[in-house]
Length: 256
Ligand code: NAD
Image 1 (spheres, rainbow, N blue to C red):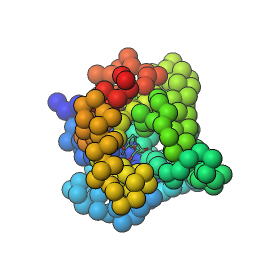
Image 2 (cartoon, helix red, strand yellow; image 1 turned 90 degrees about the vertical axis):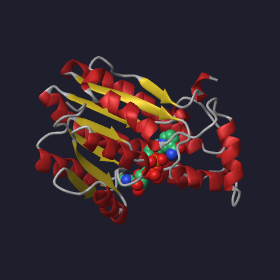
Image 3 (tube, rainbow, N blue to C red; image 1 turned 30 degrees about the vertical axis):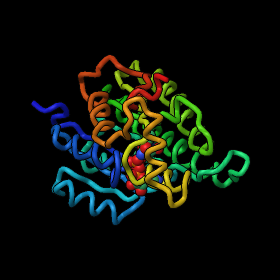
């Protein structure tokens, strides 16, 4: 018996990085998955990498848009009839600059994708879960949702907001047996991290990587599979009594 046998999982930001790796793991554990992403080309490539077939639905959508959110949730329900697991994962890093140099547009763009997008996803997915009295939502935050750091104030703000959103949603959904938790990775080896390294040290990515890894007690970046394994546990019935929590997956960073 696999751990997500016959479950339906919806994953935003599913065409790359942590979202794509989680989709791969979920499929291997018996789920069918709907992948939502802004980038259509990457969605096509992701579907091919995952072996395509009827177990994978791809929907191009911008999670910050109310219309797109309603459409991607409706497309998933049309195709699979229900949503058992929602990995509310899509996010952007924003610009690397001191807070005083961040513009209103910089701030609003990050908040629109990372916070409004997560809120809209919950708003549209929760009703059918509550009606069925079953479901698990995993909201993607970050170590940046538990700690501050310099030069990424909009991102830090957005990932702290995910903690509030998770706690509020968990309390409302718990009586209906629907769980809502957040995960908090330290830097993970994905395209987003390459972009942040470049923002912190233009042209000096390798040195920046060493510096950042040296701040982590386990002295390495996470790999997408490290995060996917935690998301799988929270998605599965093994986590049936776990809700409203914040779970670091960070090589010891939050312990410092
Ligand atoms: P990634 O850039 O590899 O993947 C993110 C995906 O989200 C991309 O495919 C992108 O096209 C999609 N996306 C971006 N904006 C979108 C939008 N408006 N609508 C729909 N899709 C959109 O990055 P990743 O590292 O896999 O990041 C996934 C999540 O993990 C993000 O929320 C990120 O903040 C979080 N996170 C990442 C790290 C890290 O170091 N990589 C650490 C902690 C948390």
